[in-house]
Image (cartoon, rainbow, N blue to C red):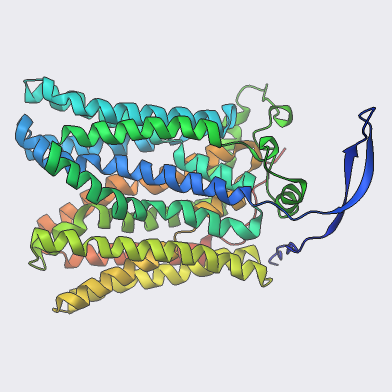
Length: 470
């Protein structure tokens, strides 16, 4: 039977607080009405900005790559090799990144993550000093590999922070907000980086984004705090978060229990991998991320080769799905939390937007049967809106990850999801080579959305927090 989520009353309630006396420092109870602060929403704003930077730094090579390859003499094989570097290390770094988060906490690990990926981004601007294309491409591959490795803890950290700062009935909106930054990054930073490349040269894209990231890293260190350490959080907000299931003590050193038994952590990892609910969630995330990487990699080429659009048209058209994905992402989280506040179970509130969104994404197969460009653009925008609407995987992770290993759990989730970053471009490439058409590719992407729906309907089951067996 589905467990109904406990609804939290958001109205200000009269509470009894302990305050110090004037002289001896002893505490006495007083009755006070206190309006809760909203510091938690500033925390998710920080996550939004850092995640936008994250995705913008991933895209630097896409923007600067043409001018860079022309100047340094990179051929298509070299560029393909370099493009793959990020995904391999990003996937490989998920579980180690999750372990670091569980061991050292979100604040410190996230600072070093931002600082390092920004430093490695900045260093890419100095590739012009190498005369040999072979030498330059090896160094660029290494730097892109390190960028992916440094970014690996970012999304598991986002999930941990939302679990700590937000009650269950607000996590959908919070997770959708930071996740929607991936679309916002395209809308905001792509024109900026394009202008810098055109006006100053490709090197300055890396200088600018790297320097900006280093500044943001130190800003993060100054502005981010855990819930129980933040000076602006009052008792009313803390009670509101905790009564709604927020894990406010997640990173408190005094509450951490260090594992002394050799092999205990691996035993717990095996429990995570053997959990049917989590395996269904992992499969669903892989399928959802397949849609993401289709739009990030092959979609512009589809518009040029299959639909005969010019590069100028593609630059405009490709931004429309990103905008629709951003809007869909925000609305999906709001809708999920709305269902929770109306008394629906956590399972219903999370699954419903995911299933609706993935069914909308399946509409992109209709592009195989229409000729009008505006219809194709509409179908693709609708599909990406649906992808954003249903992209609640990180909210589900915040709801289900065991508090003892939330970082590693998020790392496993992101590992399965981002394997799609490796497989999707390759599979679509083989389909194109075999058929000479994108029709099969669109069927493959639509089928992935269908598998995500089936996974959440029949494999995931009840959504609840995992508890380890003794």
